[in-house]
Length: 500
Image 1 (spheres, rainbow, N blue to C red):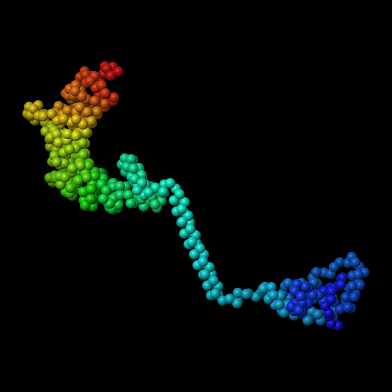
Image 2: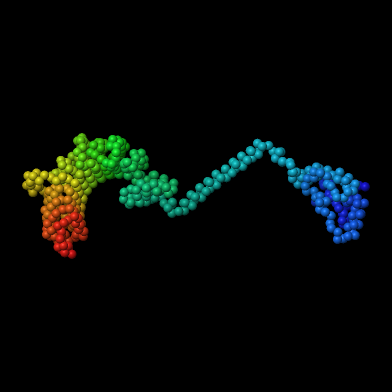
């Protein structure tokens, strides 16, 4: 007997239809009832026992999975077998999955798309991601610049920031290269400002610790500002020939820039090396203000050529400070005229200057403010006695601006004769050391104090003097604030009572 669609009754077991669901209204479930013979017995049994349990769930087949085999019902009727044989699982599964966009198990939808297409799609995604990351970095850079622009330090003009850097470096005394490097590490903007500020690169040094390449880089960045040049090679270097080569290379590098040199300092082990360097100082130096030449081996009797004169072609109109140590420059007056600071030292035997030479130099420096004579062989006393009348008749050298004087192992006779031939009414600091008997020198100081001697600092080391004359001098020094007596054995407690 064929089945017909009907509403299931109580206790009647049903299964979904195998027909195409498109013939029924969407969303409505369609059921088929069992044959009468089977359903009647089941209905009677279920109606006679209202409390009987519901049919087992395993006998109800919901169509949401692919049906791979005919359903087996627990009822063993022939009609049931016939129903199971009429079920077409592939049609049901394919129809349902096509309608809901699902793929049956075991079927890969990617088989419809080729592998090159998938790789092309991935490459397209990578390009889009890279483009987005690039845009993000650009926006972050704009954001960073916008945030930095709000900081007061970045709103300063480059000229003002450069002036601040120059002031900070110069106020530190000698330029600290680490300070300049630290400024360059702050940010790119500060680095550009530092590199474009030539005043920060005006100090050029060549030494065992400062290479010529570094000097060349600083020289190029200094552009055309005045330079402070230092060439310093200590005598402890093991290879003298390499030192001479480096000195010559450094001077060849700096020679075109000597015209804008503001200070020149040369320190070498021996005199031949000093002369090899100064042979390249033949150009004019219109901006030169300070010259310092030091030969470390001052006691060594080197065989060197004649002095390379004149230094800097004899044209140094701004030169104000000279310091020569063991350098034989022939005592040329042209380079020493108009000085305000004069330091001489390390001249022994025949290289030491005479009193007449020193007086001539002092006459050419009427505005001298600082004088220092150190480590010189004393002049011959017999020669001085022969020219004693000439010194007494010579005109006194006036140094009205001399404020600081130092005579340290400069020879007792030389110091005494110099102080007897000069006047120093503004002297404030005086150092006397290793001069044997100071009594004649103290007498000259007392005579100067009769007119004007505003001495504030007096230092005496390893010398002898008459205590009573020293006390007479101290009584005249009303402005004295500092008195240093070092290695003086002839001082008694009476001197301390006088001072108190």
